[in-house]
Image 1 (cartoon, one colour):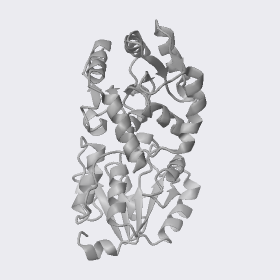
Image 2 (cartoon, helix red, strand yellow):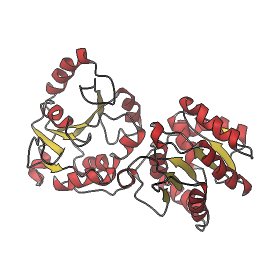
Image 3 (cartoon, helix red, strand yellow):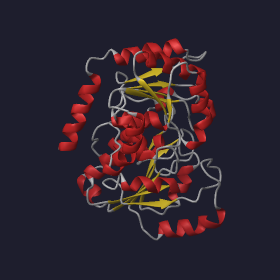
Image 4 (spheres, one colour):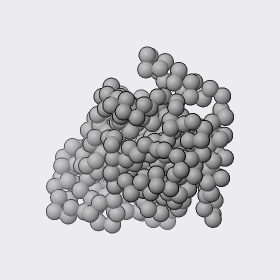
Length: 350
């Protein structure tokens, strides 16, 4: 693969990425953009978890469909629906994909699964010393590589030009409409509030609520409104943060869907969060952020733009002072919010 004649023969492409997190999906958007740019004629189908189907409405310009993955023995993302696995493989194999790209982990468990999809060609990564389906189209897996750069490296190896490393998250008019009532109720004006997100999908990645409270109070002292965000499942975390604060905050955990959350974040002065999906959402929306890493791989998951997104991590744990220092560095950036709003408006007009 790599010359124009071979790329032109790829009419149907399957991408295996059966991971459930928002960040897991957003990290492959630059790869999807590159695929679509090089092969506008191709039908590109994501093999993913059921919750991924909601993203098709936002990324229909890159993806044509999602095939629901029933799980597979050994993969921890969901309990395998064993009774549906034969039907799943029969359905996928009947579609006669020209290329299946494994974008799900090292390939230790997923490479054999990828081969069973029945595509004419397979590509992806393999753990050194382990099963490699095709030495021509598979690369060694580097465990500490950036999740964004990993799949761009693969596409470049396959001869597909890269169309930038930036993440994306398209906002719809309905997202702004869903947010309008909240903005009016809490008098949230663009650039005058900050988002504090104390939750994370994995408990080991959560910094303590008391630390978030200290940072939130520091921001409130400067006249910024503090908005606590999260899912319904994170209400206890956001409430614990609010209870530990000395200043007023607005607890919106569970009050916004993904689109409204993105619209809320777009107009925030900055975000303070753990290493979780909202960090990648801020990256996609170019919202300044301070991301606290606790128990996850900084090299793999941190945003690439370290000027706009500040990383706080150390072996003995982050302190509120560590986080506040990075918050202040972002706030000192001249006209950062005004510049961001101007560039976004120009992009929307274009």
